[in-house]
Length: 430
Image (cartoon, rainbow, N blue to C red; front, side):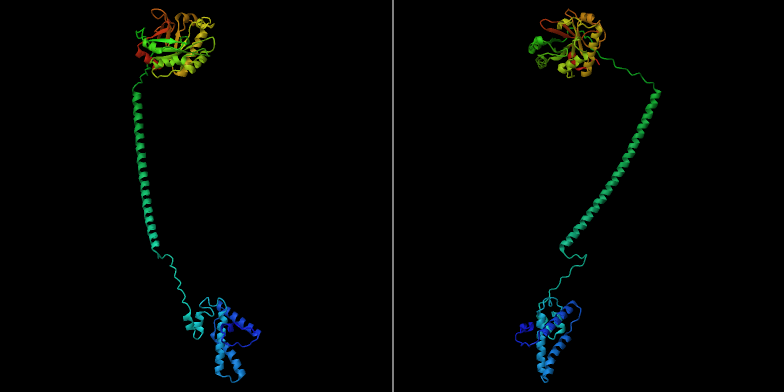
């Protein structure tokens, strides 16, 4: 026979034999009652426990007949001890002070329970949570103060922005009023001007006279030379020291030929301080004048108003110089068209009319002494004591005069060196 849980808890007490069925019934009653009391389904009843203990004690008393009060009390104490031991073995019943078997239970329903409660550890007080909206910490106070400060600052900034918007609106209205006043004043001024114009007859616009290079009375003015490939590399310091102030360099001929000494001759004359320009030998027998003008400008014939570059020149003269017939087997009208096309295209490309180099007798023979180019500066080749006679269209005079070709082509500008510098820089004629 095994010992019950009560006997294990109190080994000093003798166990009484009982059947397996009664033990299981008793345990079931205890568990169900404990659960009911713990869940609040049934209220605790010390009286019921006491009566059960008394019934258990009185049974043997009646069976014995005369057992007496002492035996009943001993039996009751033993039943109580078994009950306490049984409840102590059930897990979780003493987790809550109010549950069955807890300290509150014993204090309320067991005699002597106050002493048992006193021996239990005191329950820790549960800290009260602060009510919502109540500030309890120093950090929370600081955060609240900072939030109030930020709110005040934002309010001030908003007020300043509102004032600025109002000031801007006021300034805009003032500006609009000022603009309206100015427009009104301008309209009144225009009306007054129109009224005055109606009263005063208009004067005819005076068109400024076109400036043309005229003879300055210095037929033998600033001296210069012109060179081509048969001069090779030129000793420019030598000619500068001889007093020559300008130089023209052959750049191109027709639509294919380019002077192989062009760079040395053109740049060398500039390095010694001479004004310089370039010329193209025209070939009416090869292509149009416009095509040759483009070829010329693309290969050294450009002009710019820098005060030291002279305008480009078209050399149109005897065909024998290049091994063809005198007039290139072209009629006078064809040569006139060639010269005109060259002159117009050069002006379109550079903004300036080219100088025309020719001989009076050849111009008479091959161009019919045309007067169509009197606006172009004339470079006349005349190996006489005086230049002339002038070709048709240039009766007012020449700009350059080639007076010899021995040992090199030498020329005079029809004006002083200062006039030559002015001529190099001006856009004449337009």
